Amino acid sequence: MSLPVPPALRRKRRRELSTAVGFLSPWLIGFAVFFAYPLISTVYFSFTHYDGFNAPTFVGFKNYTYILTKNADFWQAARNTVWLVVVMVALRTVFGLGIGQLIVKIRSGAGFFRTAFYLPYLAPPVAATIGFAFLFNPGTGPVNHFLGELGLPQPGWFTSPTWSKPSLVLLTLWGIGDLMVIFMASLLDVPTEQYEAASLDGANSFQRWRYVTLPNITPIIMFAVVTGVIQTMQFYTQAIVAGQVASGVVGNSGQPFQPGYPSGSTWTLPQLVYNIGFQNFDYGSACVISIILFVVAMAFTALLMRRRAGLVGED
Picture 1 (cartoon, rainbow, N blue to C red):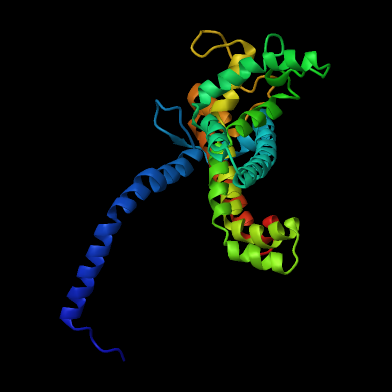
Picture 2: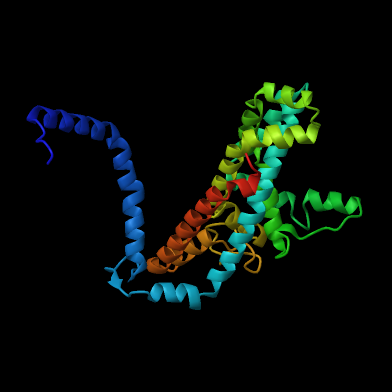
């Protein structure tokens, strides 16, 4: 039999709870307004037919059936998105770590190279994509002209279904400065005593990197991979701008433009959400794709967190 709680103690606990809720209220309000409510609304609208003008009507799983079995663009966009996630995240992580390692090892001029590699990250995505599309223009761009002078093949880049996704990967690698700075900070934070102990034990350069550097930067690698997966699954601006520039169609020009140019090779799921929801006014189906993106991103992140040792080596 539990003893009754004295009234004074109950009042003290209520005051402490009120104080805690008061301090947490900014986060609680933000979570409710910007995460919980949009998520619940998206789930609700995915079971309805809603065009943004008339009241939503419940249709059950018809939207899910339409997206998964009758919309051919969904599977093409899903394949493109998975390709970008696998290739882009892997190369961004490797290149960011590699460039950060090189700059850390440079004895002189490290500040210049650090600035030179970081500046492209500050370029607005639209401006950077337009610049890349003109540089890699297969007819007039300087890149293909230079390749031709060297007698090398001249790809179609953003106008070729084969090269459009690799071109987008090159664009993201150009703006690798954010990961480079993060990896540089983690590399400089590795205790020098551990390197000295490894050297005294006869470890060579690779062994010092494998058994000293890598275990220390494992959390940063995991951070880069997880955030990279989430960002790439939301890949939208660069793909649609590159398609518009490469096809010769400029936004708001009145000319028809089919996203995914060329031949659907740059379709991504976020583009499909915009196309179905805001161009075709089928918000229910668009919400279905958003939920699929959310579930896959959460599942992929949970898998990466559980398989951390397998991805980046044992601690």
